[in-house]
Image 1: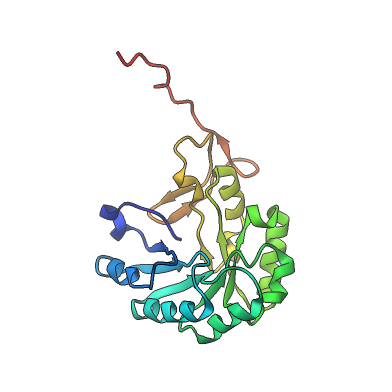
Image 2: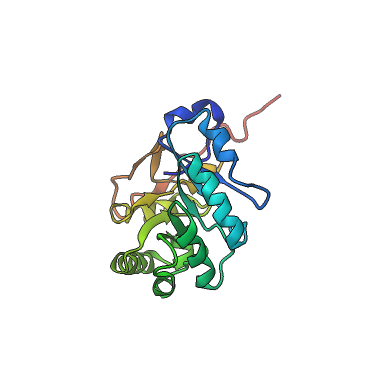
Length: 212
């Protein structure tokens, strides 16, 4: 799964994701590859035109990048189809896919779709999107926004149905009020309690201590 992590521990994670911007040409993947021999994924965040996206995709492929997520802004599917048909690596639609209604539109225009609970509007619609994607031959990535443990833990219930996992949005939070899914060097561990297994976080006993 993708993860944002400090440089000194890169080697311990099996998959890393680079978030790129319109100023990037894909060469940053080469910088990462110089110090990391694991799997690299790239999120384009809708940064480029279709032609630019294809050029970036070739540069990423040169550095062994595994896939390219949302290389162009969401919009007409034929623009994404152009990138999909001309890029040398898998193209995953993210913002272009908000639920089951988008899957048929994206068939043949991408290698797969990134399904997020917050985009779909719930776990049932996420599962419907996964099922329809499978039926149309699209690969499935399960992702998330920066959100707390209940949302990420809920989406992880569908993990066996996915080809790719990017479920680390709660790691960015300093004060998540809940505890749920755990991540250890890229390995996900679901909680074993009832329901989603999410529990309230233990209170921080250092709050309010006299610092004088």
